Length: 102
Image 1: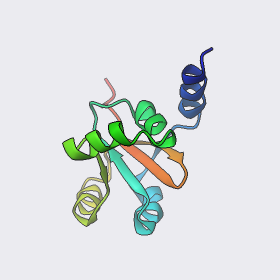
Image 2: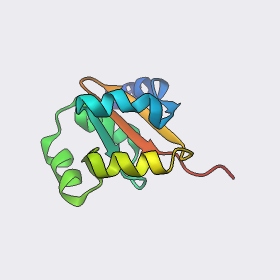
Image 3: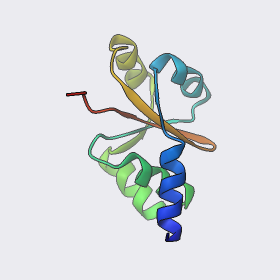
């Protein structure tokens, strides 16, 4: 496997379903990032771990990656049934809405 494929597989194995309630402490610490549904959560995590400033900056500018602020947190509280995925890439925790089950 290539280095990228190995890193991808490792992070994928560390990704799990999680509730908003479990993510709240990370929000309170200011280390929670939300990844837009159209992005690959693992690719975003890899870009963060590799300090890919150009890619991360572009996603931030386009709103595809964002620090969870109070408005986003409030929306999560209002929709607790929304399924989420998360992966930790210290010091950050990246979360993303899971696609609806069919």
